[in-house]
Length: 348
Ligand SMILES: Cc1cc2nc3c(=O)[nH]c(=O)nc-3n(C[C@H](O)[C@H](O)[C@H](O)COP(=O)(O)O)c2cc1C
Image (cartoon, rainbow, N blue to C red; front, side, top):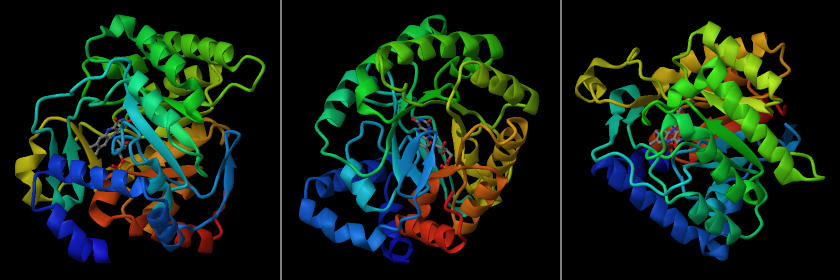
């Protein structure tokens, strides 16, 4: 509870984005000190290995994309006990994102609203960064998005260019068509649009793989899709041999918020954190049911306690990711979830 009592009050005193940047800079410094990493690692590491879409994971709790978009602190995240790390969302062109302020805390609801808009240094810079990281014990996922300057009609070429630059640096890839902060992006979840995009990405992955087994390609969906729209997307995913689905991204809905957060609740952007937990669980359960349990699922949204993770596994998730829960509870949450999951015998 050191994080909640000491670290969080200090971080929460200032601007949310500045606090995030400072934290990431610290983790980046930690990443350069093997001795510090070696000290941290035994404090946080909890193993309960599993294999999902052909990859071995030392445990089932991952870092969700958004907190380390440029892959700056991978050794530190690994030392903090994550069983996999997803970087990005990265776009073909580096971009500054939306004007600030663009990140808002809703503390009484344990939630966050963001309209960052894929702030990142671009696919080429990420490839350079990942090439310089030493060997890691955990799989690295790369979330791919569309650059703001690219019209939606030309989105496929944007994703393909990033994929080509990054293919050899990632263990799995996620097609992000579900962020609410890039104009028109979510329209790529439509049956025809998704099918055209996935068809091209799938062909490209097979070319890039050559004789080797193609690396897993996943699709991340929004929590705001109807069941019919999710069913359509799943059909398309199965047609294009997608390896799994990530459910879910942030929501544009504002249900379940504490009235004390009313001022921030009016901000535009995607809501994440505790209020998303129930919807995420429903979407995970629906995908599990609809796919007959055959499509691996990464459950993400509102995991703020070990029980949330257990319930996502019960709903059908094979892996879970954290984002906002980490902001409110720190890395001790990763350890607590991993210990609980191991005790409960849910090793996948
Ligand atoms: C500040 C912030 C930035 C995010 N950026 C991304 C992103 O770039 N790509 C993405 O797929 N999801 C992004 N997300 C969404 C998270 O990965 C996750 O799907 C969502 O926040 C729900 O999980 P949570 O409730 O644990 O935060 C972001 C979330 C936050 C709070």
